[in-house]
Every structure is written in C-alpha cells, then in structure tokens.
Length: 393
Ligand SMILES: *Cc1c(COP(=O)(O)O)cnc(C)c1O
Image 1 (cartoon, rainbow, N blue to C red):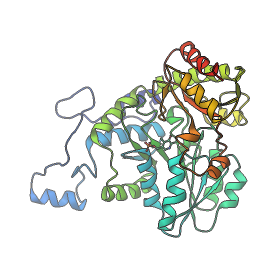
Image 2 (cartoon, rainbow, N blue to C red):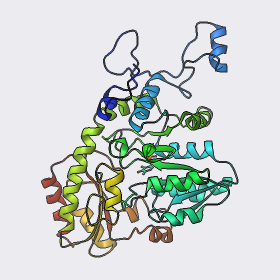
Image 3 (spheres, rainbow, N blue to C red):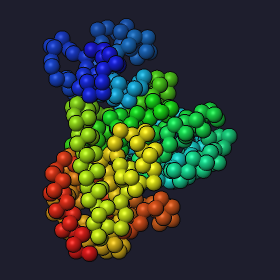
Image 4 (cartoon, rainbow, N blue to C red):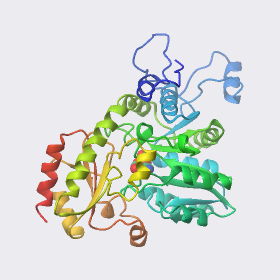
C-alpha cells in the first residue's frame, strides 16, 4: 500500500509501508528468509545486475525490512530510509558511505559515548578526523570547519545533559560550505522533532530506543534524500550491517504506538523533572521542558515537548549517586532508554565510562550526575522509588 504522505503522523505510524501478500494478511508479514528464488536463469541475472527490481538476498533487501524503512521514512518526511542492525551500525555505515580518507567531521562533544569513540578513536585510523565542539555554541561549529569537512554531526537533545543544538542555524552554516548536516534523532523521534523539516540532510536513529520502545531488539536507520541513502545502501549491501527481518517486524509494531508512548512518557518526564527540581537533595535538573533549561525557548521552537529523558545532579559525588541508584527498587538499573520501563543510569561509570575523564569533563558529565529515561509507570510510584534512594544521601 502506498500511503498518502498527507496523513497525520499517527496514521502513517500505523499504516505506512505495508504491502500485503497474496494472502491479504492484516498485520505486517514477517519474511524470515535469507534469499529469494527466481523464475529463470535470465531473471536471476537481471535481478543481480539490477536491471530488474526485486529481492535477491536479505543482506541487500527483505520485504519486512523494506516495510519498516518506508514507514520510518514517512514519519521523518524523508524520501528514503536504510535500516541497519543497530544505531551504531547506522552511524558507521553513514560515515563509511559518505566519507573517505582525508575527510573531516565536526561533531558535538555531547554525543553518545560509543559515537564519540567511533568518530574520535576508530575512524582516525582510517584517515577520517573529527573535531568535537560544544553542542550549543554555533560559532564554534563554524570555526571548526575546514576545507575538507564533509559532515556536521549532532544529537539533540544530547545524552545525558539534554543540551539543544539549533538545527536550522547549523543547517545554514553547513549548506553555505556545501557540507551535510546529520542529526541523530534518537531522543525525540519524528513524533517530537523532524530534523529534515528544519534543514538537516540526514537523520540517523538508534531504533533500539523509542522506536522499539519496549527494550526488545536492536536496530538503526539512516533517512534522507535517496541520492544519499543510496550511498549508504551500497555500503550496507556489501559490508552487511543489515537489520534482520525479525527485528524489522518488531520495530514496525513499535512504530504503531510511538506517538502514544512518546506523548505519555514526555508528560511523565515533565512531572518528574518538576518534582526533582524541588527535591532538597537534587542540585540541578536538566530537562528541555523546564523553563530553567538554558535553551528552553529553542527547545519549544524545534521540539513538540521536552522528551522522556531527564538528568539531574545530586548532593555529593560518585558514592552518593550510586547510593541513590542502589536505593531504588522499581527503577531498572540499565543503560537502555526509550523503554516503557523507567531506567536509571549513572552515566560517568557506564554509558560514558569508556571515554577519557577529560572528554567527560568537556561534555559536563560529572560523578554526581544521574539520568532517568521515564517509562509508563505511575509518576507517584517513580517518585516514591527515587525518594527512597535520595533519602539515603
Ligand atoms: C543508543 C544510542 C546510539 C547507539 O545505538 P545502538 O542501537 O545501541 O547501537 C546512538 N545514538 C544515541 C543517541 C543513542 O542513545
């Protein structure tokens, strides 16, 4: 079924991308097959050469994966989308497809820990250098650009401090120099923010987070104009960081409830942020939906709400932060986010534990910092649980 792009987001989330088989199944079909058969030797040759469209092998394309790609493209307002095995493989594929040895990237110093490692320590071995700049300082982005700069890469809001990058302003800077702007839209999802509408060239996702939304599978995606996603596809079909059909099916079902979940989880996060802001053991709350957030006005312009992730600092350092974590009985101590179950993390010793202390300091991630990714439990239960932990310090 070709879905009219004029449909509202929640309609696209449920309907877009489905192509029914001869059985007319109502729910999306799961095609667990590694390869596809041909009617003749001539057709096999035509499919392999690309003369004829159609599936060949699931490392290249698979109908369930294609349905997920189309649905996510529709939600992001993108011409096309390529799904990958994880968020990190989406970022790797994008860099491998669009950059060569000698190229340069400017990225936010508040990026997800593994992304910082990939760009900062792995890619330089292949001649691709990255300069890291403060997320919110637009002039620093401009100053870091070189003649060989290919990409600007950011995440907004950042993890875990929820700093906001001005997507439209950075798109203008990038395009003036013929550079592409890439936005990791993991925290907001297209329900809360559509970077392509604001001028970004490509969106990347860790589908593992809100798109699945129930902590079940890993997945990733790159969405944007077909001219760019085709480059990513050429890398992926050869190198193989492909999304499995099973995971694509789970993610398709995740997208159907994305709008409901994001709306509810954001509303709960705002309540939690307000409550934390008034808690005597909490020294600071980072949440774009609070007027106290330094970029609250910008967040209101480019996001529909503050999102579901709140971070906060507690009185003390690592020992006190760990006491809060260990005092909770309901919140899950896990690094994942975007789940219906609320998660609690100490970033300095987990998600950001493998970057250097200097990089951590530059990114503003202290030992007193905790992050919650708010799920769908009752706010009163979440507050009671955190209050128990906070009472221990
Ligand atoms: C988790 C995450 C990633 C990496 O995704 P995986 O699916 O774990 O590989 C990338 N960016 C952000 C913002 C993330 O939160």
